[in-house]
Image (cartoon, rainbow, N blue to C red; front, side):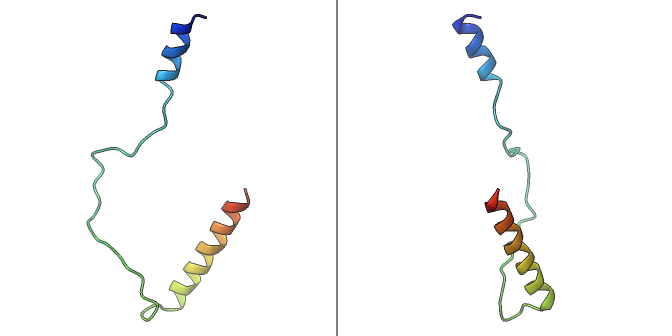
Length: 57
């Protein structure tokens, strides 16, 4: 395998990117502690627990 063969293989090996034609709904959502209900607080606790588990790996 020569130097040129190696370069050709690495050019095709790239990480997938977000498609440029992907559109958002344009809605920006903010979280308000004052307006949060019990389910919102549970969802936040689950999110924190998931982040903690992900950081351990």
